[in-house]
Length: 254
Image (cartoon, one colour):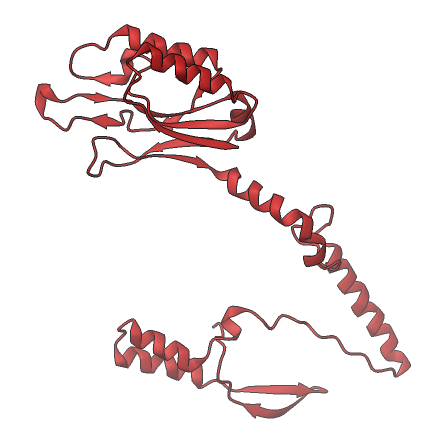
């Protein structure tokens, strides 16, 4: 994909339109989008205030759009991207800035939209092209060669070709098998490895330092620290509680 940005102050000259058309035809086999100030309108509806725009410039820009099979990407309001910032009858607004994309680009990125942002110090609004699929497609393409080395064969969630309930069935089968073997007086043990969650590793001293840095009241910080540091944990072995301990990290719910 190719993205091109331009600020064409000379498009009022027919030679500039011819040069632009020649350039676009030279890359018509690629997927590309053109963005910028074209300094011209596609119709008189794209202007508010002031004298009527000349048809000659519009026809020349339309000729480029039609010959190169370009599409004017849809946008969200406000409609006009240029404002002379004068008042009353002297105020003129036009849609000079736009995104134009060829057929290959439009077929690739169907879910696209253009946002006209607010004015800053310029007479032109910034315009933003949003393609929600662009980043996900690029990321997926880059990860694809190494996914087999990253994803375990036990993992089934959100993996193409695997079902999320496969591991659930495997877990039930495993526990069922262990329950039957308990009758044979053979020892078995199951561990749930889910110990790396962020809230399980937050140190109390770090949390207190963050609260102080954020300027929470001392009384509030004291109450929070009393709640999280007063908890005690005990371990069950064969149904009996052994050894009580006070944790120094981890946030519990409830």
